[in-house]
Image (cartoon, rainbow, N blue to C red; front, side):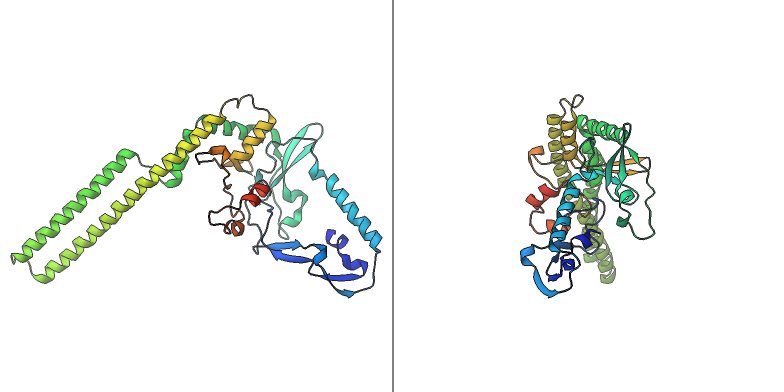
Length: 334
């Protein structure tokens, strides 16, 4: 309907160059690709429109302008712009069933919910599809997420364990030392074996074909052990980097942990916007995606939220992987 009400063709003039195809600047959901085709249409400035033909007018220009003004008024007064009720997780909740975002809804006398976006906009789903998710009680979900955030901030060792699991470093430093010792001992044993083969060949104990075959096997095993030892050394370097990132995250937690128990709505909201990437609700299961700053400057350093397929085309435009101005404007948009 909006396309009909904003189409100037009904005033009697056909224009070209009204839209251009380009990369997406907004998302319907943080869990879905920005657009199936990788882009979307953007309206151009009316000064760039090209008049190409005249057709019989259906409405006058005055009527068209009046409708445009009414559309602006409707947008300002729309229910989605209602600020009468506060939602702590506004813009952060996603439906685990269909992947779309959830919006806050209030019902009298005082019932607050998060509702899947497709409940009010079924066009977001393919024909014949229907999201079966239920309304999510807002206050219970907010208390759960805030309590979990406080638990992580007050016990930053949780972050260290999560980084270790993400890296796959489940083994302890003592096990790492034992593994390195075994690899070193295996390399030394194979080197001694090659020396003994060479001595046996020079002494005429074994022939040339047998010597070459056994030497190739030993050298192949030796190269394998050397490669494993190099990988283990690289793993140790990565563990050192992870330890530094964990230390930065822990220092950040110590700076913000004071006053969490007495935090008001505004402070809770700021911390949630900074540290929570998404809250994915699937029936009675809640999955919280955190994005803790791991740099030395902590909350003072801008960092990209770790969202699935988050503006990949735009992020690739800069060598350091950031689109600073745009990301700051769109970081909370769905």
